[in-house]
Length: 165
Image (tube, rainbow, N blue to C red; front, top):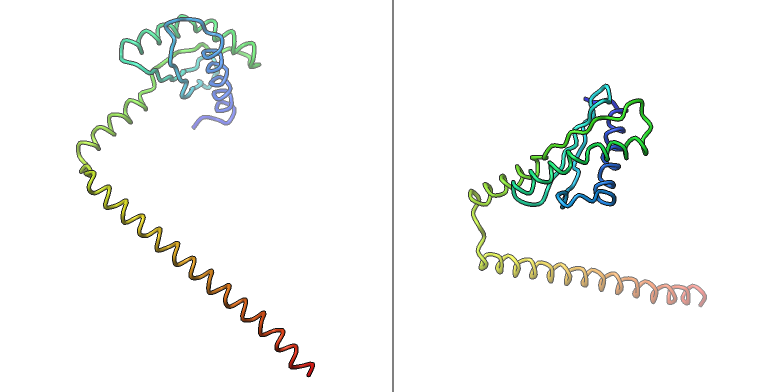
């Protein structure tokens, strides 16, 4: 488990690199990039920057190459904004988490039964009926509470009048 210092450094590097890619980097190969996480080695001399790229394999490879070419520029931005003894050398990697999640989603869609529109309508009708029943029950409770409150108010003045008579 990384130390708190390394986690804070990784978070700071992620923020600086993300903003620099978004606002300062002008490489046309670097498009639709999201920095997902950064792992910093304990000696703070190297950092692995995990990114996701929207697009196919070709676009991902092209973007990764553009990021590697811009690594020196991004390292200079880190050096400007974060005071550390060493400016970590950046290594860019594709984060496979999003890709794995999409594959799991596809597998689940094949394995699990798909609900038909008729089932959805029935479920919707049931949900609407339950909502109406709940609303009616709430209205009845409110009416009972109001009626009970009115009876007590009416009986209180009568009670007061009988005591004074």
